[in-house]
Length: 333
Image 1 (cartoon, rainbow, N blue to C red):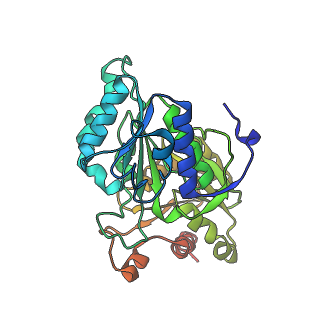
Image 2: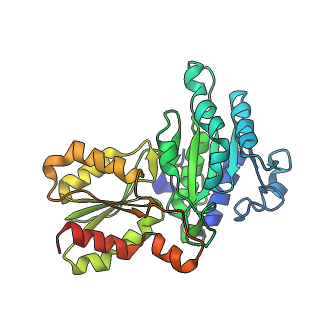
Image 3: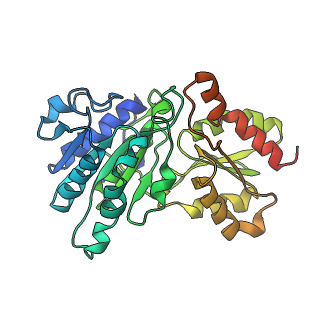
């Protein structure tokens, strides 16, 4: 396995890092294939499978009927009989179409067969708002799947993490849902040429700080970084943590940070009520209560469907301004 520090860097956008990760999975695993709606001829609606049909052929990159339950069912059966499928669910919103296969089959079969059946299924799906795709194509539903024993859930924020988490997911013998973000597709960053893994369950301290821990999920990490200057004006030197993996979650890294900073703010794009922020806040309260100098704060979207109108959507999606305002409120400023 190539260690992170040994890999040679180059710059790629997030969308091409996804392609690179899937390509190297297919090169490494002869029993891997990609299946989903428009993944072959069109290269997916967002283009991150482009070129793979020509490189690997129609037996390994193929379009399916418009049936999410059938697509995931295909993945479950293929994995249980020796393949390592990469399944594409075009929009995370469409996961509702296949919840029986995900909840009662994919997440449960290895347990129910006493470990004799492995389910190495990697599901790639696209979440997030910001492109005026309205209420049925813009949701962030990661909390649904983090609640299911048997599933792993990762959320890559950078091009580097997108490739590394896809490869890690495909090498794992458990089902892994890779939650991608459509507003991150053009973000560029260093991505090594060689295959590498981002360990599932290991957070990253993106910025070290002294008096506030910000746990920022997915694209909100970039908004947290944008908020740094505004926070500094308030006398706040934030430490920013990107969990990268939501299930399993790296509680230790968050608690270690809060023990140093004595304050915690969790930020996610999903609806605030019932989101991952509540679980992370509970873990901070349970494991670092004596270190806290203020209540744990959360930033999330309002309890509403995602608006289609660009003006309304801009008021709906959390951003750097929201982060600064919540920090200010936490400190009573």
